[in-house]
Image (tube, rainbow, N blue to C red; front, side):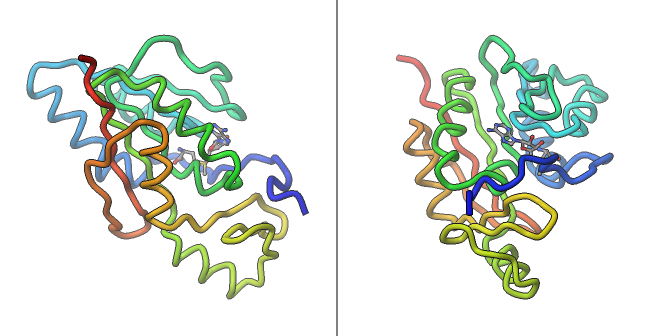
Length: 187
Ligand SMILES: C[S@@+](CC[C@H](N)C(=O)[O-])C[C@H]1O[C@@H](n2cnc3c(N)ncnc32)[C@H](O)[C@@H]1O
């Protein structure tokens, strides 16, 4: 079976900002604003834009890109903070390196990248309990839904470093594994 599976919405109907946005990104943004900066934020794989709307509502310059829900073109320019929230776990393993490279390419030198995915053990537990078909190692295709991947922490780190990013932190608070990466500053 094609690990890509059906390319339907791939999105949870979110009206409130995501947990990684509120619990991690918001702090990074406000730190910079309090320091007198005006950070440019790109939400890569923004879904229907709840995080971008929330950030804009507090005065942040935030842009969205989403190949399914739009805007369908990656915005021009570079960004101080790029978020990739609950995207890598809905795409098959083979597609993840290219997405990380695209994200790294949109990050300004010295900028930060926040990558959050569903915790691998949570996805695996749900897959086993629900009998989701396995389409590749650690990759499942829930009936009537889209691909779900269990991404180990080490894979997340490897994806970021392969894209030229440096790991700043890696943690697993409730409902997410979150890696923060930095793009090396230009010499
Ligand atoms: C589970 S949703 C998460 C949306 C949003 N970040 C959130 O947390 O509410 C996954 C999103 O990834 C997007 N997506 C799928 N493939 C992508 C790709 N190659 N590049 C960027 N986004 C992608 C989908 O269109 C979908 O909106």
